[in-house]
Length: 412
Image (cartoon, rainbow, N blue to C red; front, side, top):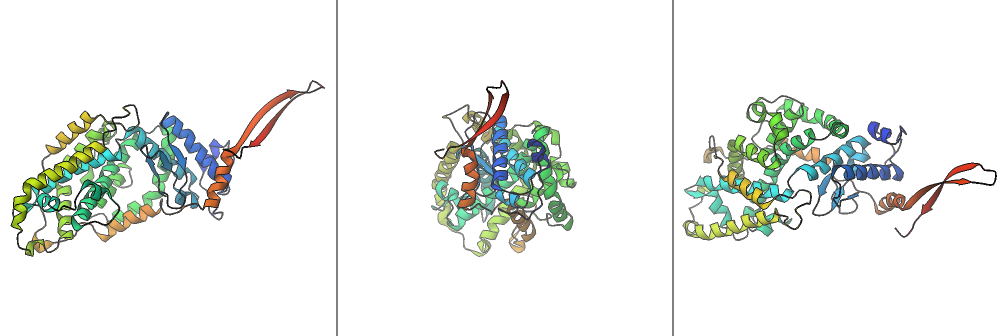
């Protein structure tokens, strides 16, 4: 374990009865895991979620999945001594499970708006929608796969990934503001540690490009009081609305507010994947494949929809009734798509700057990458096998003695 670090564990120390944590020993990491399990049972009681550390190939950043039944503790943050912030990251993820629709539901909403935008964007009278979904390689499975895939698959996957980043940013604001103050203090400490990096990027102009990464971090920075952004204040500055919205209504409002920006981004990103599209001869065969394309895409949309409906357990966390998702999808389809200031063939540019993309990677590295060795993992796990029982006995001299019995159960 890392020893030569400054431990920031003000709140964790209080939980331990003001015992100061001085090292990241296996016992300390076990205590962190135990506290997160305690908060899990308070935040999402009855939900079966294992709190675990990342080991050899496991996800390493803070994330929570009801489907997988796992919550992974970001060991990279602990290695830097950020004990309170680590707990804050976990409290945040647990509140995602309590308050947010599932990632599959958000994927469905993103797909619905993406395809609407793509249908509205035409190059040589042929929509980007038809150009992309005419590719037989574009399937639900290929989009969700980790393999590289065709150019069109990579394009769709990139757009969905970046839209989810934007959707998650505003959802983060909603759930953090709905977190009880005694728990939110952990999240606030984590925000304070990220604030200087984000504020510096904003002041240097690294968030001035038209990428969804920049829009995401401007939303977060503005609503977490790291800086004031006039565009966000004008278009999406009503924090009370964000806090009191449902996860579904908030995403509809997000798409409506930034329809122009999302549309321009999708168009620019398509051009970056297809830089010679304006110089190519029109493929008239694609015109005659429109019906096939429509059926193919409808099938993909249905698969995204089905994946968002956990009808087996209506009482489970993150359950969204199918009628709600259908209603939300219908509202998304009615959003007006703005197409002002789209790039022309003369001004082909990739819409995501190196600066905002690098900022995103740098922030991810703060929580991802570090993993425990198997030996370290087993040392932490060993503490779960220790049981302490307190007894009081009266001996021959009538003196009552209270003592602890420690049992190590090697079978657990």
